[in-house]
Image 1 (cartoon, rainbow, N blue to C red):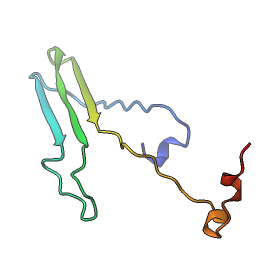
Image 2 (tube, rainbow, N blue to C red):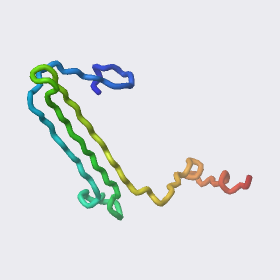
Image 3 (cartoon, one colour):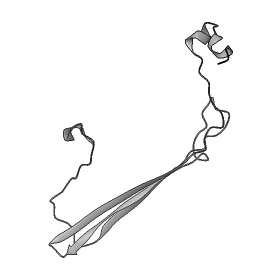
Image 4 (cartoon, rainbow, N blue to C red):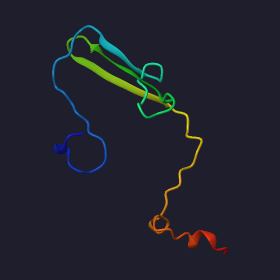
Length: 107
């Protein structure tokens, strides 16, 4: 949403007061992504497992000829990704300095 609508969370409804058409019009789309189509990261040892499908469409047409029209759209996203099988450990500054006393003492 652009800055003209303020900094408050919520939704924006945009109403267009332009004449419609007496015939139905619409479009469909899909954006597909998976590891078979993606390039492998140069430093990675295996292909990524991200699979994403974004899909949707719009449709517009008459409700009453030359008087009342409708227009609507939908977009959906399906994302699947395998989780990492390992846990990372980030050392503290004390560990970088060689002080492991906080981890060697028993409580």
